[in-house]
Length: 118
Length: 108
Image (cartoon, rainbow over all chains, first blue to last red; front, side, top):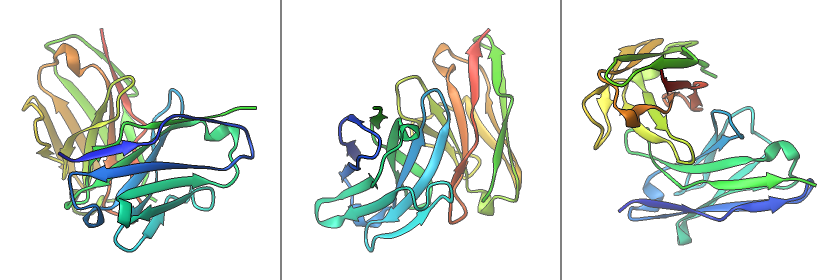
């Protein structure tokens, strides 16, 4: 069974750094890209970027390029989304999702809620 | 970047009725790489349709997708109570995916 299990909810202060994770299981982790999607409270889905775990090649949305870093450790089948300096506007639910063989996102993680507040 | 515009923003219908949701792209979507997702409160999105018209595994046949180029449609033939949710289209045919802003399907 394909599963993407994300790390737990985080509460951080503005200016702090953070890395959240997404562990894949039940499939060959290096064969499928992982995407990250943001959903701000009460708002829609925003595609942030994706990574090829086999070589860590990434694509970013222009809206997120330079604000976050997507990485992966294929040895432990885990992808990451990280911030070096959080802002209150980073408060959101973050989903990881698998990009299937035909390029569509087919499996989603359960989401990680990030709250940034002073 | 391809911009997707969904309409209407909110659709109020009754169970048993037919729902038609629209997704328009700012430029042609490559190879009909257009998907539809359903999201219920507190849940991750669920894939309904991919390739503009192919149903994902386990999706009831009351859900259908159509369209090509810049105009796409999701149709729910007879609404069931569990279908009331938010629906998003997504294009995934370019180097950067994008989502539409969503259509909320609510009970009338």
